[in-house]
Figure 1 (cartoon, rainbow, N blue to C red):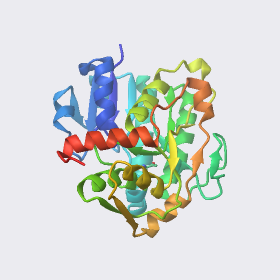
Figure 2 (figure 1 turned 90 degrees about the vertical axis):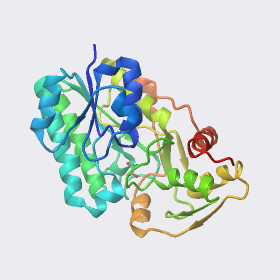
Figure 3 (figure 1 turned 60 degrees about the horizontal axis):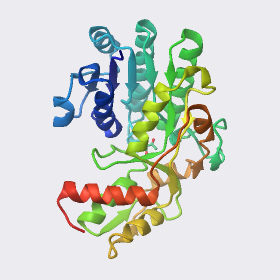
Figure 4 (figure 1 turned 60 degrees about the vertical axis):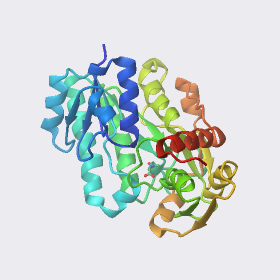
Length: 319
Ligand code: AKB
């Protein structure tokens, strides 16, 4: 039986992944851990919840030993834009937090999922069909922690036999929990504003292509890679995964098909624009497809239909 710890369980991915893992492996076997953000009622009431600060190693080992944890989804991290405004804290949480998780996993023999990101690439990475193995010289603190994290996870696998696995997530779009301070957040905000105001001011320029993914595919990627047969994995930390690539005007045009009077204008945030320009336009995720069967279900059109339906229900607004 699996006993799973999810760090960052109150965040955008963790809040939904924890609930799916509880359905799959049993509510009592999935320990959701948060630090600063309050858990939703669903998360708090559906299984064990603990407060855990990943920068304090003893708080991790206490939970891992108490609940006999054998697998960790380590999602606690600062996202790109926040990391750029607080680089020292980003290093502490993203790197020291990961180091502590890996050390505890070495001692207690846990398997570990660690998400990397399109942020692990930089301006001199090929931007179209970005290969699985390529130049990684990011110029943001977020990117530095993501590349270093990938290397550290591979090191723990090779040196200490810790079963580390990861994917390079693109921008994640969901209708449940908002992302907290990323460069791709516009692709979530736009749906809320389209429904509430019928207009949206985008902080990235038109023509800024980025990889994106809907939450159900994100959860599938995280679970599928952890359930993959280790013998077939050539890569580990971390696989390119994507579901679609679009620029702001593409998502606006798709929303307009459902809300014809929706309009978008632009007010560019230079920090997030520079970050976005240093990231791929579109990654090649064929290694994930070949090695562990990665196959996304949602594209821009099916995601937009589902997002608008779910958000209209949640916000009680008819479009
Ligand atoms: C961000 O924008 O920082 C994240 C990411 C792509 O890693 N969504």
